[in-house]
Length: 362
Image (cartoon, rainbow, N blue to C red; front, side, top):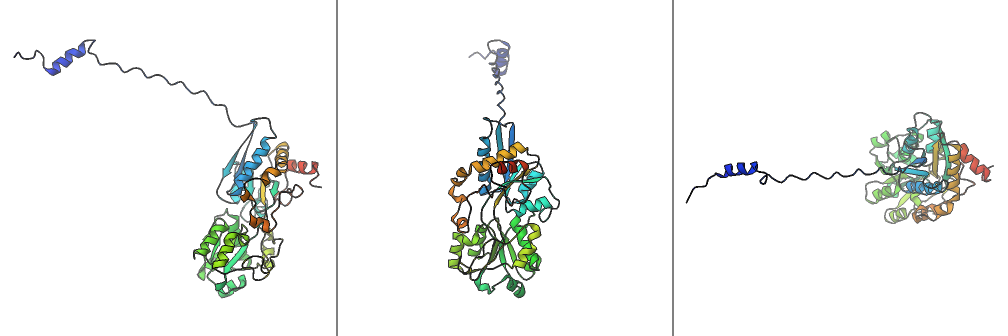
């Protein structure tokens, strides 16, 4: 057998020298055409509303849908900031230019911002009220009956180690701030409460606070959200007897410089589970829409108009917006004759023009 004329490497070398043996060239990649620029989605008028959580983003959506109808198609657009917080940050977002509008609660929050007290170290004179959605709410101060106290003075005198579910002490949560101020008005503090074995169990709203008591992780609560009127409270009271404590009126009066005041109703004995005596408490009502003074008079007029003229749409939203608990203490269907009142900051001239023009305010 004759030997091969070429070794394998040599054969490959000569093959590559020939055109026919050249490896196939990789086809040039087809250029992907650049996508045409999309049409900008922001309208000529664009608003951002800062809204903490729960019902507030829904309020923002309802308002924006109403405002949209006041403009030609696509001229109005908006963003809703779901901050998951509450409720000072909503106003700070206006101050910082992150938003033009905010939803907050109660009226004490914009009041403190406008005056520069409490949660706010400096006044914000450009804050303006737009309208409010009337929503009855109050502070529930409740303790387990087996603690053996009938007043908060008893708690202080006996140094009861309360593990109390309350708002966050983060410089933003109005409820948590109010709890600290409530203690000061009684002549004590969170530090003293802790010194005798107490603890603050931070919860964002009342429902998880009630669950903390059910689980044995707390034995008291200081919170908003109509806790005493809720189904969760009724369930709790059926398993663990609770007592709702009255808050002294002189204590409530000490909170007035911060914009807080007494709830309009006195809860008489038996009104809710745990109301074993007449109860006076702190008001925490209303959802307030505020904005910056730089909003034009025409736009503020449209905002007020959208709110009033879309009340039917508000009332037919998700039924959880009007809970049985709130209606139990007089939740209001928005009333144009009161929507401009008690906003915690001066009414915007454009909103005022609308309410006066339509005869809703003198």
